[in-house]
Amino acid sequence: MFTGLIEHLGTVAAIESDPGGCTLTIADSAPILGDCHVGDSIAVNGACLTVTEFDPQAQGGWFRVWLANETLERTDLGERKVGDQVNLERAMGAHVRFGGHFVQAHVDTTATLIDRTPDGESLRLTFQLPEPTPSRPSLLPYIIPKGYVAIDGASLTVTGVDDAQRTFGIMLIKHTQEKITLSKKPVGAKVNVEVDMVGKYVEKSVHAALSGGDGPMRTLVEKVVEDVLRKKGVA
Image (cartoon, rainbow, N blue to C red):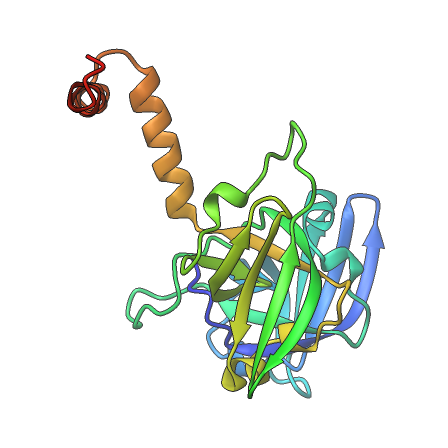
């Protein structure tokens, strides 16, 4: 589990492809390797990856992760090049303050940055989600104004949503612009998106309650509907 508060910016130092995926070496990462172990999880641009090797003593420090083809297809990591910076966050510890929001670092989809607009020292960004498909339905029901969304692993607040255009916006204050890679991405770039997991659980629970016979939730909803109809003189 992660918080969406980016700890450090690492640099892609090497990419080694194989039939099943690829291995990334992330350099300039010593600040987050002090308590690292092989098998630990580190979110790289919002994707939870497992450390396979690391060396905090080498110049700048580095670690390696392996990405399956599934991960490369669902995230922007397959488009990263040597020299690119990436957002890094270690899995959260039980002893730390919890900021941001609950982030699984299981990327739902990618979106495209379609607009960058300065707003004083802040920066407003607008993203467009892809057309929904039967295998990948729309994520718009989980994205609401003032709600949470993780973009490239960073916990951000949604400023607006346009369901018809499949777009949503966020704003980066000056401090955040300096701490994450998102402010450097150009229009047309892809970003990793993970919607708030709480919304998914709520939707599933409601669907189960309403379609699962005469449970307490169904009874409650039916009573509310009956009361509304009665007040309107329909029932």
